Image 1: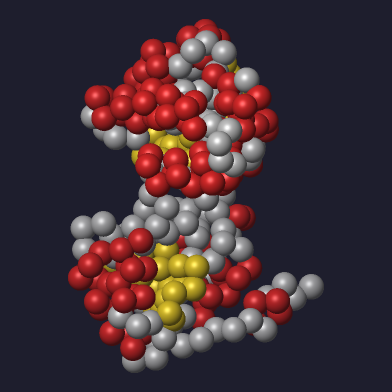
Image 2: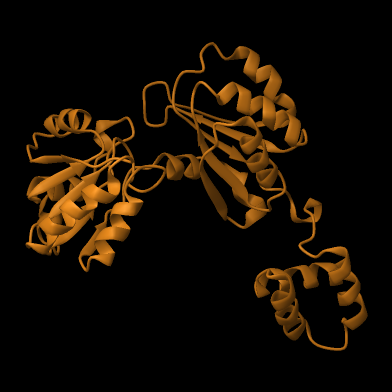
Length: 295
């Protein structure tokens, strides 16, 4: 069966930058469309030329490579913009996963769009989406929603501030963590979360030693004692707090004001006024009004 027939029939406009996700560990995860695009473009910008050359060679693809990484993203974007304006087609790949998601590519994308050329992002491998899809009922408190917070800060005090945000959030929070900091981060989670909350630890996704563990905070210390090596790439998740246990978006003054005026106007009108005063969304204000009515 000729699988590439599906890709050959698709639009492939000139003067376009194609953002192409690449495998995060398993070469078989590349998509048919990604292989087709990479084999047809005039050149490929990449985060690391040596790494990308080995990856492309595994697929039998040979193209001119141009280095674009976090230290030269603006100047390199100007080079690619000129190529696109001349009618060429270029792709951008990061070392692994989807460009722009905790990887270079976001600035490039913005510069190309500001320069008047087109961006075409392809779907594909991503550690965060793989971890979320394997989280089970981890997302139940947020009606399926979640927030991705990128890499946790290297400084402990900044990391702890972000963990405090996740600890009070109604929706589950996910982030990346480096292997040399993962144990310290888990110890911080023990401090900031109550024992019943769940934590997801996804290690080496799509690789031979892949592991996805969902565990309560109270069971985390015993599990940590069983870990023989912290080496690997990690996605961490913190379960959202149940709405009944989460702090109100309304401060004490707002609550007193709501109590005084509630019943004189409808919830819809009241939520609009609260949104203007507090800055929270009308949807969230309306939800809290309904919840307080039911209490």
